[in-house]
Amino acid sequence: MKTSQLDLRELLAFKPRGGTMSFLGQRTYLTDMVSHGILRKELLSTVDSNVTRTIITRSGFIRGWLLAEQIKRKMPEVWSEARQGKLGPMVCSMFGFGEVLTSHRTDGLSGAPLVETYFIGSYEAEQQLRLSGQSQDVVCWEQVGFASGYVSHVQQRTVYFIESECQAKGDCHCHLIGNYAEKWTEKDTLSLHYYNGINIENIKTEVEEILKIEEYFPRNVHSNIDLDTPNDYVQSGYPIINSYPMKKLIEMAINVAKVPTSIFVTGESGVGKEKLVDFIHRLSDRNNKPLLAINCGALTESLLDSELFGHVKGAFTGAENNKMGLIESANGGTLFLDEVGELSPSMQTKLLRVIQEKQIRRVGDNNIKDVDVRIISATNKDLEAAVEAGDFRQDLYYRLNVIELKIPPLRNRGEDILPLARCFLSDFNEKLGRKITGFNYKTADLLLNYDWPGNIRQLANTIERAVVLSPGPQIMPEDLPEEFHQNITKPSINNGIKPLNTIEKDYIVSVLETLNNNKALTAKKLGMSLATLYRKLKEYDELQNFD
Image 1 (spheres, rainbow, N blue to C red):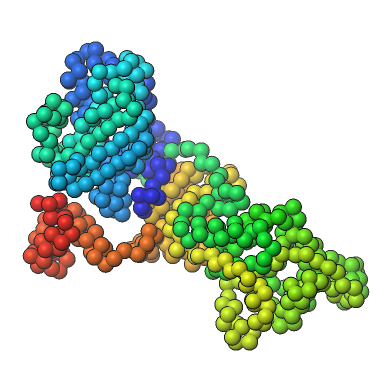
Image 2 (image 1 turned 90 degrees about the horizontal axis):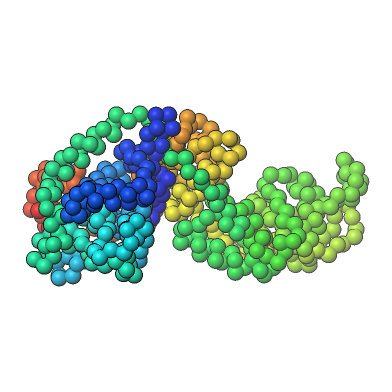
């Protein structure tokens, strides 16, 4: 799972029986800003502000360190991005600290701060203003500590943050600056003395001991809090899309929807061709007329002839009444011909005449009727090859394929998998009367790393199966079919293909972290000399992180 795919609903877990909640597998609980603000005010009135600020800052430091450790253990792909500084702003928002306006990161070695962040909506500043009025000093103590603990773990070096501007003081934003501990100067001593006494090695040991508790948690504690999930599967008549290929496709579909040009939809089975056709029809000027569809490969030639063109009474045995065909019924609207590659030669000829002359004749009738129908066709076959082989008329192919819309397979749309899965989950909860609240984060990884040969249709069936079979309240890895567990080690390229040197770097760093920075053992496991390992770390500018 990537940073962009994180969803708080899949990180929180709730077990109604027993009243336990967890975040990334570690037990947590809910609190609120008001009681937190009052507690802070009581502390300030009971002990001096220095003691209160030290307690809150150091508590935040531990929370930040613990979160980083949980991400490192549970989400290696997210951790890799965290080490590049891509996760911090999202963490800030996810934990309710406020909205990050801008965040800039450097190497911290050239004189500029390691991290510089501007944000608004700090809950600590808000409570200060509500309960005590405007402050003479900065008040975002927990957030400063949290950022310090989190970034210290990510950097594997002690990093301290200070707050230079604060909305509680009347500033227009809160301004946090983070630097390696040794980079701060004497004039910053006053802001840093609240960190005095923090022993990172002790914190590291204590956190590792605490996280061992996780293995004793029963299965159902790893299940989502019961949050209402809006059924946003349809936006303007089309599924949620996040992936670049689908965004480009939808842009093109919107552009061609308003004109009556024939459209040719291609793609593997199950990619959602019918959904795209419906989307185009809704946006077209023909949306007040019918959209009718037929699968050309599901009927015999004689039945298809009757279904498309209609017939008159007595045209053949069993034709007891006049019947209007789909082409005539769709007059003024849209006709969708699915699996058009299955048409027989004679049906191809008749369809070509409809497109060219805009006229039809019912089976057994001598009268010709004018029709105005937009034809959208679809296939998962290679019609160009069929044309070359003489199995499909070239002139009909070009008439149908004025505009081609090729829907990419789901395996090439990694950013769409989880949003679609969540919306299918909401749909099936409603249809089946279940209250499955979401996907365990390990389940989400399995969904992301699967090939999806059946595309969106298979995704929908998989989610429906899981909703039916899961004891709840969350879909766990074991609720998925067996074939998903055979894909655990498949590398994911959901966010694009990486250069080999990037993959090598990420893997070496991951092995080093797994082996607790034991370079000799890492070199041995990787089948390289210790000198080669040092050389590669230097090349990747990672040496200072593993000194």
